[in-house]
Length: 72
Image (cartoon, rainbow, N blue to C red; front, side, top):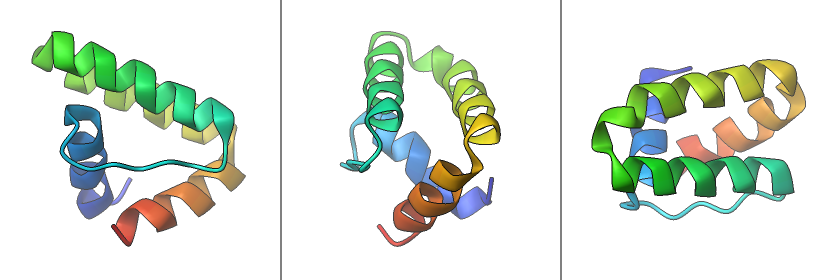
């Protein structure tokens, strides 16, 4: 994942940026990760790893949503 996009994803997980995907599963992952990071900021690396695994399984989602996140 591009470092610029990763920084924005971290902001989304911390609740500093708002992003809504057209993909329900991606939205659910974001919500779950946001709750986990808000409760325990040290879990950021775990959440990023989960996101990487999800995006590896669904490259179409990765292409579309990472491009949209990059434009935030």
